[in-house]
Length: 136
Image 1 (cartoon, rainbow, N blue to C red):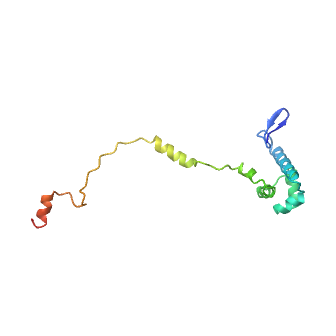
Image 2: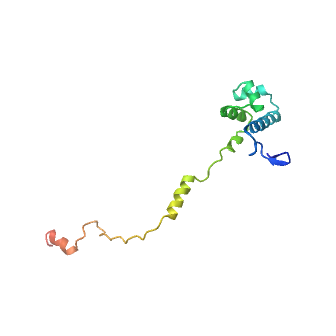
Image 3: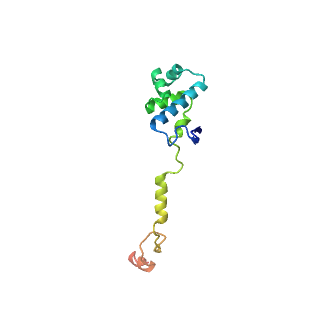
């Protein structure tokens, strides 16, 4: 959600933020979510399977592993936040590239195919074939 800082609107971890600022803003968002669910840090730590100190560090923007962030976000019921980091790809970039190559490749005229006899036999005429099989 956007918010105002020094007269400009930014996202929660805005593009212009330093890594430290981004960590602090993310921690603030996690703290606000926890409080909105009326949970204390110990409850979140227990649900997430992490220590109380880890939750405190995360909320204070003092760094955390990705695994810890995932656990805490899931414990707070917001796994959808993680989806924003890796949106589903509806079209494979590799398939798009292959399709572009097929479409831009020069087209060649095809040669007409020779027709084969329906019975799958050899190409000789009927008379020659009957002569070789006994003459009748």
